[in-house]
Image (cartoon, rainbow, N blue to C red):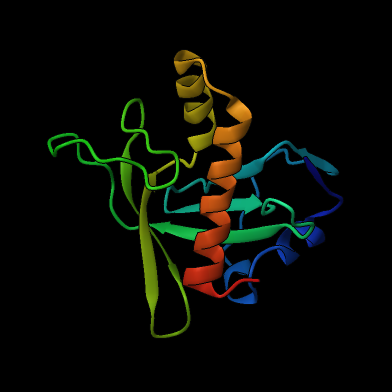
Length: 151
């Protein structure tokens, strides 16, 4: 669990290039107490925002994704690269800029509600939700570190 005191602190979690795109959900009140991570879709459905803290980390990190492709129900179901689910979610490509010339993407749940799906799956399988959540946060941190160079 982590706490974000203000809008300024939340925006500071994002890279400077992404801050201009961040639009907080209406009614957001501070301080925010965040269990594992916070994700929301902008009002236009174009961007998805993620704020998390890596396992063992103290500094919240934010990623602004673009929803470049909507889920296609006529295709063979895909798996989310982070929560490994394919049911109950639209899976599609979420991308973000590395720099002015490069973008990276990953196939994820388009609403980033991976935690809820993971909790449901692990409960049904009789496994620990904590292990699944830790794995999910590790996937997020690895993407931020390896694809975006975020420490």
